[in-house]
Image (cartoon, rainbow, N blue to C red; front, side, top):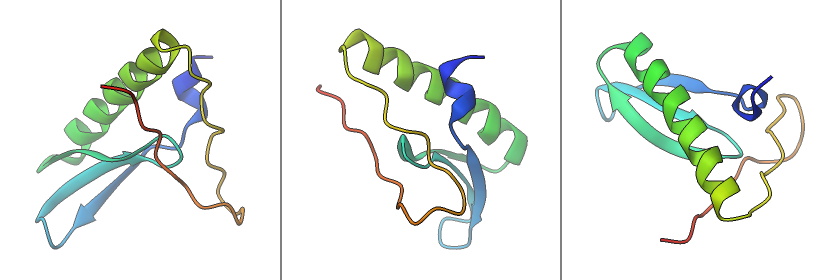
Length: 81
């Protein structure tokens, strides 16, 4: 199992933006968008893998995966530029 498999990936429709938005709660907020739901999901999976690789390169611990049904709220992880 890859590290990225542990993270929830969400693609949702945004009325305000008139497109699909992709995010991974607990790891990264809205990070991709588009008109095709499947393409947004595929892009999101790539971004999550790359985000995790960057965290590893910076020797940062991965944030705990967001679990549905818990009281913890998701947060973003910030990388150094």
